[in-house]
Image (tube, rainbow, N blue to C red; front, side, top):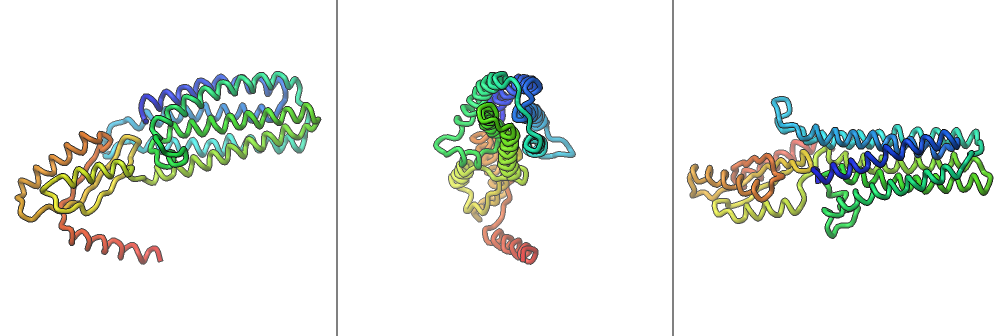
Length: 320
């Protein structure tokens, strides 16, 4: 997903949020609505976030060098985490602050119908961007639920935009309801309450995104499907007696580091071991191009188990 599809989703959201932000700020200035101002800030933050995601995509494509021998794939995960922080610090913080000020010092909203028109147009733009993001996300989730697909996804760009657009549409509904309350109930503080609610929605969205991208930053392993394919390839290799261990790490959506520990049958020669390792590397990378780096350790099964026990013993005192 971290390719043309991801960029298409981000560009769609970038264009939509740019147009929406301008109209919201204009309407907020004209009507004096705190909820509309919060929505304008929300769209402005989203626009900046899409720029950061595009920057992260570009940086993640840089080739490996001496300082970063495993490449820059994790740049995408870092900038996705920054997006979550910005949503919380700027979008949520400013919206809640503006809402509190409006609740404490309420004043009527002028020309609410202008705000209604802008909110309606914004809903259309957001719905289009959301649908593009959802279709891209739906292509890879298969039979999984949305929550399970997000948890398993190694590409944060699409689900970040999907969450942002979902929060944006929910925020638009809240702003609309707040303005209706001000107009028909005569309660000016409802505009501020709507702004606070929008801030809470943004905070919840930011927390969810931060939680998901944190796991990617720390390092997540490959999917069960990828692991099954690797095991099948190893199992079909006659020279290998036992697969001791598989360790995988996603450095990017399409950048997997794979480390294997295998035990060869005792009767084979060193030359056969070399040929088998070469064949394994070619087969694995051919069937799974996302495996960009592969390390194979030749180790007797009993020796590997001894080392695992030593590792556990070394870690245990630190955790007690």
